[in-house]
View 1: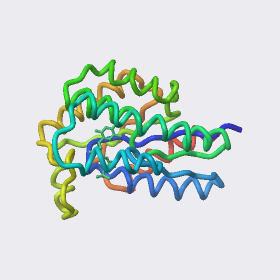
View 2: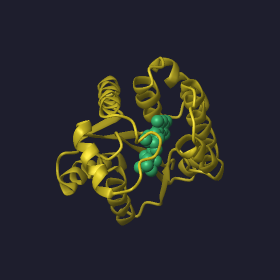
View 3: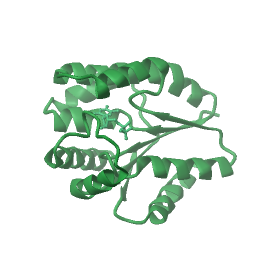
View 4: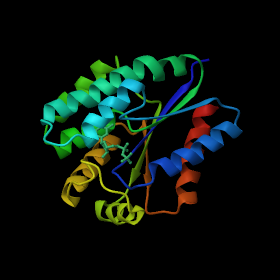
Length: 206
Ligand code: TYD
């Protein structure tokens, strides 16, 4: 049986990895074989691209940035995600192509349809079975991130307005594809959020 591909999306600081950890625990309890992965950087090549994107000093032209994310994604899907799905595993991805549309499209003012098309080409059309959007006001996500005390990377150093426009873009994407997206209010408790996620995932497993 073919596996499943589930992705988490949302602006920085909404708690994607916490929810992904809890979902992984649930799926393992359901006897599923789970593969956890991230973008950018889900493969060895991807780690090098991630470094270029997030830690290299100096400007990266918007189209170059969009293509680097797409290159990371192309390799990631071809060498890790598709083989896992074909082997019947459940892939949990922390970010996928909706991140590119939201961040490079809305945030960086590239044409969103073009950004999406580049990714669709890169991954030969692979879309997740379910995309969980953790939705939170940018100002609230900002104050959570500041509590972690880690140095912001290049994208995290953007202003609150940038993240508000990324958030709006995500909400539009979710509204356009209601069957693929589950929008979860990330101002709720960790347990409340996870309960909504599990109930939707349970339906996918049956
Ligand atoms: P992420 O790994 O979630 O950040 P962290 O490990 O610091 O929590 O993502 C790194 C950054 O890359 C994040 O700010 C969002 C951005 N990003 C894009 O702009 N476009 C993309 O296509 C992806 C996958 C991520």
